[in-house]
Length: 219
Image (cartoon, rainbow, N blue to C red; front, side, top):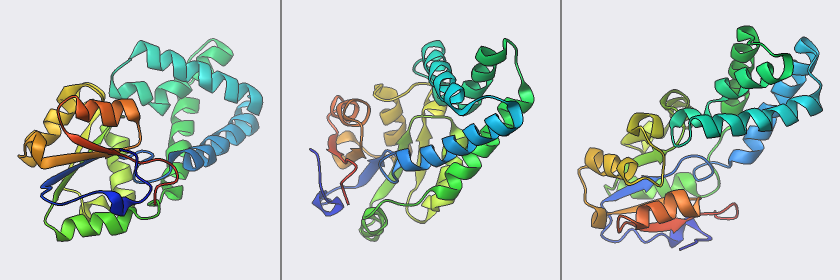
């Protein structure tokens, strides 16, 4: 079910919420663009990689990482993207470049993050109802926990389950099952909320978990 408003989510008799993070609790694309553009500028200024070249190599490197470590949290590692990007550009590894660019990317990204409209009021309502909540997210634990800190999710959320921790990405059943184990709840006691029709919605529904899909206009 695609919702236009967070208040469309029926919390009646719900004991637990499973929540995607990226592009669900905040808008990913504008934040990513600012972080990416900052890296492209430094790559051009300090490493003489033209911005258009940086952009094209990023896509190639990202796709290569996705293929090499498909289904794992590391498939989203910006550090691996940047390591491979420089290798594609120069034919060798440059640790300084990879580490500097990754730190810059996430520094800008985290500084720009904020809740999307309607999210915080919804989380507060769920908390007041005594509903237990868990983030169920792809990507590595370290950066997702940094996002947790930036958004101060401890005020509302009880647990974080990352694909790195689970050893597999959504829509695989185990990542959802691990969340249920932590919450000590059954499939019929929780609902899933996410933006991705395959990973979040179909993944949850395969376990008979009711799911709500948000899009960029949901508020």
